[in-house]
Image (tube, rainbow, N blue to C red; front, side):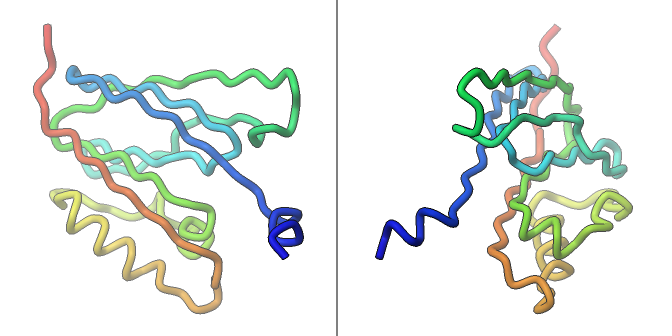
Length: 130
C-alpha cells in the first residue's frame, strides 16, 4: 500500500531567494547542487545540507552568488544530473534559458538512467541596483 511506497522514499529540498539586484541566496537539504552559468562557463555551486528530517538538530547554511544579466541558474534532480554527469564541462555561450534547457534535456534523455528527471533553468535579465 501507500506505507510501503513511503518507506523507500527520500525527499530533498532546495530553497532560493533571487533578488532583483542579481544576488541569489541558496540553501540545500540533500538536493543536488545547482549550476551557475556565468559568461557561458558552467560551475557547480558549493551548497550542501543533510536530507530533511534526517537529523533533529540539522543546520542549513546558505550560499550566495551574484548573477549578471544573461547568467543562468540550472536546477535539476539527481536523475537529471546522473544522466548528464559531465554537464559542468559544457560550453553554453549565448544561449537563452529556453535553448539551454532544450539542449541539456536532449542530452539527458539517456535510457540507461531511468530515474525521474526534472530541470529548471532561470536566466537573470535584470539590472544591478547600485
